[in-house]
Image (tube, rainbow, N blue to C red):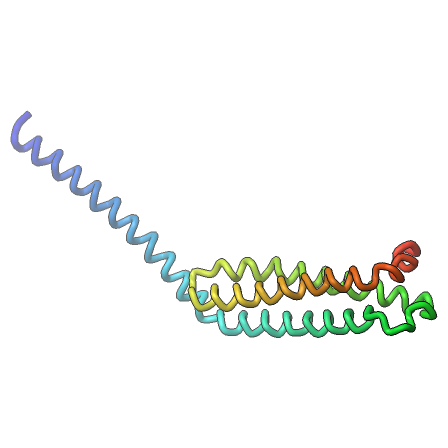
Length: 150
């Protein structure tokens, strides 16, 4: 092998290494560009998620109020029993749907968005536990409504 061939093969190795580094840098740049474009809408998305969670929280409070034992549950009409049984289940479905979307946003490459969404997801987990407590509170009188197939 001549010195020129050795230089040529060394140059090829260097070019390949440079191409690999350039490719890695380009892909990293693309990820950063994508993250920057997403960051522009993060505030709006976060506010929408907060608003949706606040609405769910209000519905949880309403469902809890409907299901608290106040002494009138024995004399309730079928419609009232059905509404009382339906309320926590409807809120639980809405919360599950909200969590699906929120977990995708919690995987954001932006630390601030990720942290904010993780806080909201934690708050949603608390609401889920509260809904489970509501289910146990009203289990006794909710049975008739469930049997009717609400």
